Length: 130
Image (cartoon, rainbow, N blue to C red):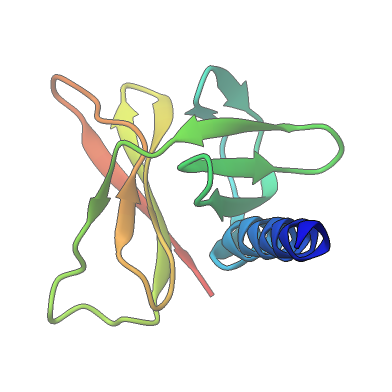
């Protein structure tokens, strides 16, 4: 009886690890950003970045060249417009003066994710990801 309980706990643990791995690797997009931008608590330089969704923590991990990167919290999910192309990936930046702030992340086959809501007057810059 005791060995069955231990086996059941071991299987449950492996399944939990597998689901965390799947959650971390399921939704990602890579993009080349031609300008410096704010994300989370940092200003990141222009360059190539990967935006990886982590369902377990409900965040996006942003990784650039070297150690450049940050983590941004997901504020809420955004529903894709019914007429929008479901396979199109894009990043939306709020623009205030000459400052770019990562606002939305749209991943092919999924809805979008709001990561920052800018108050006050601003415009948007959309970076389409191929």
